[in-house]
Length: 427
Image: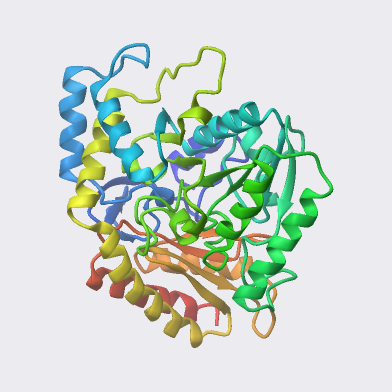
C-alpha cells in the first residue's frame, strides 16, 4: 500500500470508493492521456467520470481560467457577473426550451436537487416518477429518486418516488418485444401507474442511463411518455448530466432522440461543460423557473472562474464540431468493440452511441451479471495503459467507455486493442 493510499484511508469515509487494487494517483494530463505519480502514461477512456469532455489541459480553457482568476475569482450571484450571463445566454439558446431561464450550480447532484424543488413547487406535489436503473446524484433528495440500489444508501426521503419501466432495453419484462411493442408496453405501464396514484410533479429520466451502464430505451419512448404526461399536467425533467453537449454524436442533447413531442420542461446539466471545473445547472421555462416565492442565491454556482472555463470549453466544442467527431470516431469504436465482443463468451452486449459506450459482461453461457470479470478487465486494461469506468444495474458488470470528445481514430484503435487483450484475460 502506498503512503498516500494509507493516508487516504486514515481520513476518508469507508464508502468513498477507489478504483483498482493499488489505487492510482493521477498527477497531470494532456489531450486524451494522463500520467500517474510513477510516470506511467494512460489513454483515458473515462474522463474523470465523463467530465473531461474536450481534452486534458485544453489550452483555451486553462488560459480562460488563468486570466479570469487574475481578475477576480469569486463574487457570488448577489452581483452582476458577465461570464455567467454570457454562458447562460448560450445555454438557453442551445437548450431548445422556449423562454428559457438558466440557474447555475456546482454539480449535477445540485442541479437535480434544484429541478426537483422547481417541479414539486410548481405542481404542489411531492410525488416523482423516475426510471428503474437510474442515477441522479448523491444528495438526500437525489438518492431518493435513484432506481439503482448500489447507489441508494437510504430509503428515507421527503419525496414519494414511483418507478417506471423503459430505461433498460435488453433486460426486464419487456426485453423480448420489438421496439414499437416495447414502447407501447412501457406507455401502458405508465398509464396504469397514473391510475393508482395522486398526480405526480414530474418524470425525471436520463436519456441514456450513465451509472446504470449506458442503457437506453428505443428512440421515441420519452416522446410517447410526454403525450401521457401532458394530459396529466406532469412535467418532464431530462437529466443531461452525462448525455449532454453532443457526447452521443447523433444529438446535442439526449432528449432530442425523443423530441417528437417537444423539449423537456426542465433540463439539468453538469460534468462536461466545465471540462473538469465544477459547473452544473438547470434550464427551465420561465414560468417553471420563476415559481419559487422565497429568496434564493448560489454562493459558488456561476463562479466567474468556472463560467469563463465553461464559455471557453463550449466555444471549443462547437467550433471544432466535437459532436461530429463523437459520431464519427465513436461509430468506428463501437463497431470495433462489437467485433471484439463477439469473440468473448463473457460479453453479453456492446451498446451505446457516439463516445458513450457500455460493454456488459456476464458469466459464460449465462445471462448472469459478472462483476468479478468487470473488475478483472478494469485491472488488466490499466496494466495495458488504458483507463475505463464501471457501472450497471443489479451488479456492477458493465465497462463504461467515455473518452474526451476530441478522441482521434488512432487513439480509438489503440484503446480497442488494449481492451481486446484485457478481455482475453477473463475468457
